[in-house]
Amino acid sequence: MPPEQVAAWEKQYQPDPMWSLWTKTRWDLSHFPLMVAIRDHQQWLNQVLSMLDGEATSLSANGEQNYLGSRFGAWYQRLGDPHYGHITGFHEMDLLHRRIHKLGAELIRLCQSGDIEQAKVIGDDLRKQSPRLTRGIELLHQQVLAEPVSLDTNF
Image 1 (tube, rainbow, N blue to C red):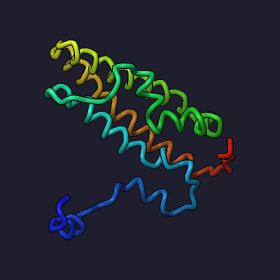
Image 2: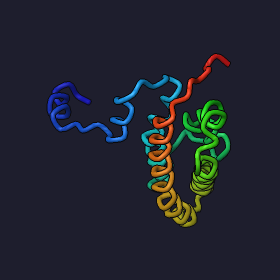
Image 3: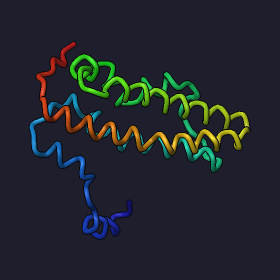
Image 4: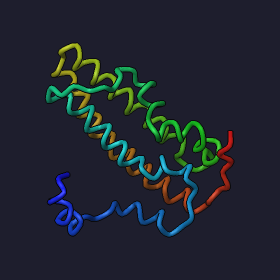
């Protein structure tokens, strides 16, 4: 952002309301990927969908690689599941997250092969699934903060 635009941006800036949940509690830095998961997901989704407009991407057409490479996917596997796997809906959210990454990988593959029409169909499905993941992450934020767990991050 050009320096002359910073003051105007600062006056209108509104932080994500979900972030306020985290300001009211002491949280472990290991939760950072959960805190920014919605923003990371939206950036990833925008990057994938931009391929429909001819934009290039550095993302892989391998859904599992994209899933494990996401901060949320890595957090889920390393810290989330062992500590919060008992939370209702936690494992279902992981299945949805994996499905979204598989859809994204398929869209990338289709765009790379030139099948834009089929990629648009996949893009529509991604747009439908994305809000479900966002709502799940928001609920997870609330549940994790409601039952803080001491995390051993030295493994």
